[in-house]
Amino acid sequence: MPTANESSSLWSPFRHRLFRLLWFASLASNIGTSLHDVSAAWLMTSLTLSPIMIALMQAASTFPVFLLALPAGAIADVVDRRRLLLFTQTWMALAAAALSLLTLSGHVVPTTLLALTLIAGLGMALNIPVWQAITADMVPRHELAAAAAAGGIGFNMARVVGPALGGLLLAAAGPGPSGPGAVFMLNAVSFLGVIGVLYGWQPAPASRRFPVERIWEAMATGIRYGRRSARLQAILVRTAPFVFCASAAWSQLALIARTQVHATATGYGLLLASLGVGAVFGGTLLPAARRALSLDRLAGVSYGVFAAVLFAVSGARSVAGLIPWLLAGGAVWMFMMSSMNAAVQLVAPAWVRGRALSLHLLVFMAAFSAGSVVWGVTASKLGLPRTFVLASAGIVIGWLLTASHRLVTSEDTDFSAPESLA
Image 1 (cartoon, rainbow, N blue to C red):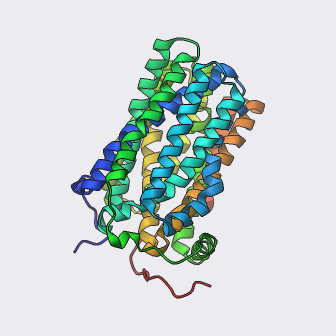
Image 2 (image 1 turned 135 degrees about the horizontal axis):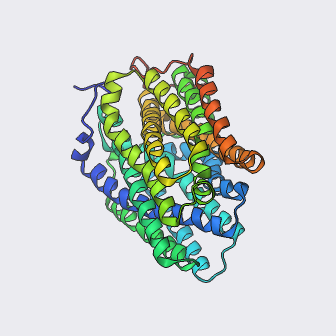
């Protein structure tokens, strides 16, 4: 029987019907979300050129995930995951529809845009841990790494199609709220495919036997597990500085596009799509990279390449000059995020997997939210070029400070639920 350490084909998870259906449905939904994100960011730059307000767009979508990561992970381990996913998908669809109606009616202002981004982020906060946790219900354990990579490729394919299509739609619609408003409604509709697949899914009886725990008890158990698991701690420590510094690229790209390289909406969409293309390419290379490099070395490569990307962005003066660097940045972002996510699933026992994933998500979103705000404030004080030089230096320093935390995913752990974790 294959083990979790064995490399599976990237396509092997698609043999499983539920994984296949949800993958394609989530691809459509993620395209809608990417359309939404590019339109919302571009709309904000038309409402204000404040780097802080633009950075707050990223923070508004990620801070709820940080705030609710632990309870969301506990909920993912103790409630019906299918019903929770139906709730979160419907919540996000309604938030997108509300933003569409407000935008089309001409009532959107920066605070309205931030507020509804925050509301959608609440749904995403509850959605992410349970979505990640059901992967283990859909594929065998030895295919988890391949499933994580396939999921990442789908997500980043959407980040190729969505921004490029979004830029074209915004350019075709011209100035005014009609383009963003229509895109927001397309996003609302895009959730229907996932909702339909989930309605048709009947989980096996084994996947419904949840631990008899209250939410707060489950959270406390998850925290105690995180404190005792050196392997999980290493993953968290190596993730945090990378995400904190890399968030500069995500949070300030719209402003880079509009003010530094003087891109149109179509050009901004191409820049975002370049990150997605790079990530898809990185996902296809990931199985070979994992065979050739240890997880430690792969993380080191990701740190180094992204530091170079941030430094290059600081001096970019054209869309064409930015695209190759964003392709490279997308590839190593995929290397890092997919590998860390799969590593968490491999080191965490099934009884605490949702909470382990939520701890990883907590660290990721804390670093991303804090980084977005810090780099936004820095850009408002020092300008974009100096901000990206500082972010590049920061990612190198982060690697030097955390390299001693070795990443290990071998399977000599007791995966049974303990009687007590006091």
